[in-house]
Amino acid sequence: EYLGSSITTMNDDTGSNDVKESDFVSDDAPVHSLPTPEEVRTNAAIRSSESGSAERETRARHRNRKLGICGAILCALGLIISLSIFLSDRGTSSKDEEDALREGWAKSFLLKDPLIGTALEDNGEDSPHWRAMNWLVRDDPLRMKIPRNSENGEEFIQRYILTLLYFSTEGENWNNDMRFLTKADTCDWNRRFADGSENIFILGARCENNVVKQIWIPSNGLAGTLPFDELTQLTSLRTLGFEFNQNLEGTIPDNISDLSELEIISLSNNIFTGILPDSMAAMTSLKFLMIDDNDFSGEIKSVVSLPNLELVYLEDNFFEGEIDDSFFPEAPMLKHLDLSDNGFSGTVPPHFFVESSLEVLDLHGNIDIEGNLPQFPVEQSNLKVLALHENSISGHIPPSIGNLKGLRHLDLSYNYLTGFITDAVGDLKELEYLFLGSNDFNEGGIPFFIKDLGKLVDLSLKKTKRNNVIPLWIGTDLEQLRLLDLGANDLSGNIPETLMNLTNLVFLLLNRNQLTGAVPEGFTNLPLEVFVIDHNNISGDLNFLCEAGDTNPLDYMVADCGVNNPEVTCEEGTCCRVCCNDGDSCKDREWQANHDPVWENAYERSYYGFDDELKWVPSN
Image 1 (cartoon, rainbow, N blue to C red):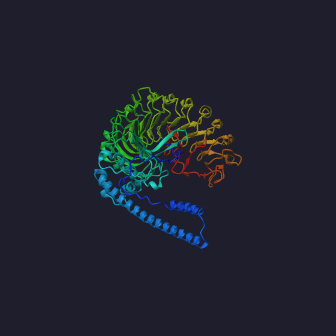
Image 2 (cartoon, rainbow, N blue to C red):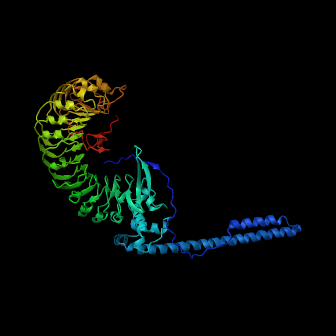
Image 3 (cartoon, rainbow, N blue to C red):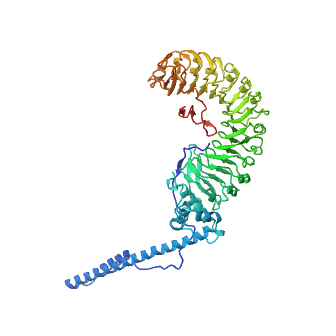
């Protein structure tokens, strides 16, 4: 999920192109040359001025002459107005006749196309198909010449298909009209936009040599059914993108392979359904396949052997099938592969880690992916993100994981891993995100090798059978920490005061341990927004964390301040969001510090979620 949502208009100049097609009106149409009312008035004024220089007659004769002239002028004006109305009515009638003729020719032309013609025949006159044709015939200010045959009809077909796209997706309600349905040439139905980094994007339709090569309309409020069948008629397309429109639906048709030059398909975050047709196996030009966050289903065999893929985002759908060595073995340029939150089964294929250009591998949320982790026999620095959480992987973490020297993000949480946490994880010096929680590791203290991972921002060892005390070095050597989750372990002793050095710490979860003593007063200097400390043996008054003078007030604190047997003092509602009683789950037992993670812009974490309701966007 890469395209940002903060796109603003850079240039809203609608402009207009000169008409490039001659009007349909015949050269033999009648032309009138009667004087206009303005010409009559001007001529009358000249006559009146000339009469002032003539020799005066008697007053009676002069009065009669004036009355005669005025009468003549009024008669002339009446005649002009009558003729104007007559010719106007006749002009309207002529335009209606012309439009009827254009409609007949347009029908004749479009019905010759097997796909477009069938759609017109199968749909009523209120359908987007008929509305598109009628707009081209009657309302299009460009008034394109109706082609007589397919040899010179490509530009007309392009304009029809893009007009159909507009009417099929509630174009009247788009956030930006992209200059659709204007006098502009079809190839200029687009607008320039800029993001926060001053990058310029041209959204809408773009052409080369008057042939449409790109249709890219993201985050623009499109709704309804995408006319996918007709879009496949634009066989020179290289980019087809409608991501983040939320309410756009449809299925990928079998003839998608007619788009043999297509390099980018981006349909993310909509409600598309159906399967990936077998014909997609022929789309060897495809580089970016981004169809995540939809309702697609079935297997993905038709795309796993495409040789030029670079980015593949299929997450959050209903895909299934066994992941094995046949998955993307011949895609030497594949950098991102995200198959998460689907119904895949099988094991993690070793070939993803041998002579691979992969930078991101995300298979999380496929509960039927099982077996052991593969060996990582080759030292490599390409892989940056390895997300395998919420699967059914078992066995030990192999020491060869230390060969993944470039890893910044490692998430193995919520599996069935056993044994000791290998020291080889300490060789991953670039790690910023390490989640190992909710596994069945052997008991032990917090691993000392973590001390050397000074770039860590997010660390979770929740429910990993950690015991002993919280080491002092967490507060001195992990200065970049923003999230620390040590909940649901068997940690004892006091909360170390060295944690006050973690000036970036926003989320601290220490609940469900055996911690004692008081919370250090220096915590008021931390930018804490979430502090969960219930089900410990902590004592004292926690209200100091919520004092009016605190420049970093807590947003959400949970502690043992329940009315039955309060162990700490904390005003519920004004300081502690939730006060727990002994034995009460307090709803935080199932909290996940990586709940429904969303990673934007090169896998930077955009927000922190702990359950379906609790989400934070860090202020620092």
